[in-house]
Every structure is written in C-alpha cells, then in structure tokens.
Image 1 (cartoon, rainbow, N blue to C red):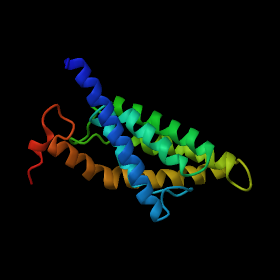
Image 2 (cartoon, rainbow, N blue to C red):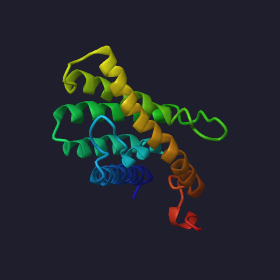
Image 3 (tube, rainbow, N blue to C red):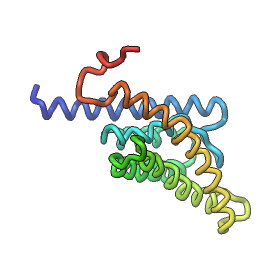
Image 4 (tube, rainbow, N blue to C red):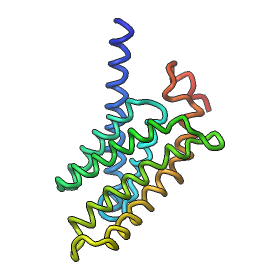
Length: 180
C-alpha cells in the first residue's frame, strides 16, 4: 500500500476513534446530568485538546459533537454546538505550538472562549424565558465557560501530559510507548 493511502486511512481511523470517544464520554457525562443544559461538564470536552497533537482530531471532535448533540433532540444545539466545536478545534490546532512553561495553555483556551460565546448566545437568544438580553448572555456565557474551563484545564492539563508522555499521536508504534 502506498504511504499516502496509508496516511489517509490512518487519518480517517484516528478521526473516527476520536469521534466515537467523544460520543461515549458525552453519554457518560449525561448519566450524571452534566452533558446538556446551561451548565455542562462534558468529560468529552477534554478531547477538544487533541488538535494539539493531530489534525485528525478536528473532524473527530466535530463529528463526535454533532452525533452527541443529536441526543439533545435540539436542532439548534446540533448546529451551534457543532459549529463552536469546529471553530475551537481549528483554533486549538492553530495555537498548538505556543507553549507556556512547556504547556500549550493558549491552545486550551479556544474551547473555553468559543463555547462560552456561541453556546451563551444560543441559550440567551433561544432558551431564556425573558428572551435575549445582554445580562442573559453574560450569565449563560459565564456558566458555559466555567464548565469548559474546568474540563479543559483541570482535566486537560493531566490529559495533555499523559498523551505527551506516551507519545500517543507520534508517528511510531504506540504500544511500545505504553510502559508504566
């Protein structure tokens, strides 16, 4: 098999596995009532940091988010949530090489900001009983942003360090790197 074809297959498989993991982790969060609503602590959002390691994570988390949002039975969430994830994934990839004390702290920020703004606007415009208002948006954005901040930094930093330590997205046989 040609190297280019093998690379494309690996890209598709990696994106598919990330999408499946995103869906599974979102459903796990939903068991505890944390996946949908104004305050979300989706464990799956830690995967939005994977574009730091591989561009295959961009379609992976985007497709995973879309599939997971089907369970919300809300077309707006499928559109806005998926769009926010795509934008955040691209920005995470763009900022991946900017590191502070050997951590890509700036790359961890796009999921927080983009989701806070986009989902905050979605909630303020479409779901608040009093309708769209500046303060409704601010409160919604802060709620969404706080959940993202917790996941992307409190879980994201250890997640990043583990993925980096074991070289899980390096171009070598991963199983050799999984020694304790």
